[in-house]
Length: 355
Image 1 (cartoon, rainbow, N blue to C red):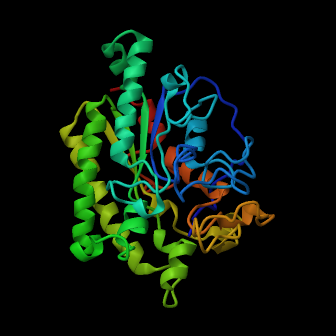
Image 2: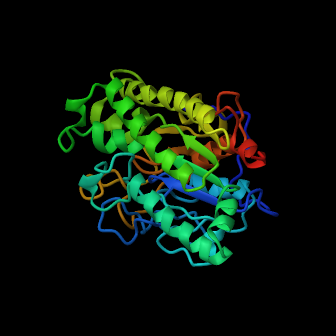
Image 3: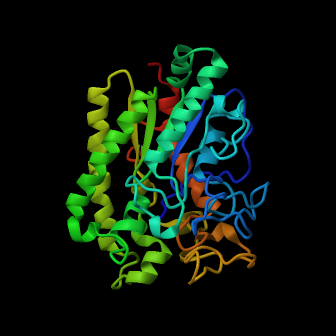
């Protein structure tokens, strides 16, 4: 699944100087969540061991064994500290950015509702408006806040749950009865466009949009549907590709219409393609930790000891990648290894751009 043979994987923290941009704002789901769900009544919550076993602060609400993609991108951008979650960010911290990510969240408001509490993209945008008001107070005016925000990097990673915890769960959601896969991708993109436009109207000018990954390859979906002899549930990956193709077109449309901003597409499926054993990831179809089959289904069972050699596993639990995979994915999003990793260029190019 992961073509990484040319990549030197960095598992330790980077030596960081001055940040390349003044601030970094993160919108997303459990791939990016770093603690926003901890205070919610929800099954999508992981502030307990063995989560965080390789993270300096232990279990923080990150859905992996160590750093998540937002952490690694923050390192690449040169930030001294990781971007704080909205739930606990101090008044001064907000100047360098906020992480709004929430496990179970989606583009659609109802996505993930069977899990309990989660913060949809629409709600994350409302939280961002609160933060903008704080920044305006700190800097002294709305104009200074807007100037500050125009120089920041914004990443959005949404859509995974609109399939995993919506379209692919007909027992809870009507979407698969209402829409064909092609229609559903179009409906999602239409709503996503409006949400991205809201973020633009709030002052965002450098925006990276992450495509949906190969969710047909995650252990939870493979276990649920079977693969008919393939390595993954191919029809699920085909559904997702419909969305990703439309997202590339959306990036072109946004760049044509909003000429004072720049939007890029991160090809999560392309980055996740190839042979994982090239960098020693020899276990590609099983989670590192023992996962629950009841409450919090697919997440690690609390307090259980996980696999000892986590550098050989692609998946941490039945849904989420290990830190080593996060490092590879975030590194290639920041600095494209292949011309297809990012379009029209990567996050590093976005950071260097003068608008």
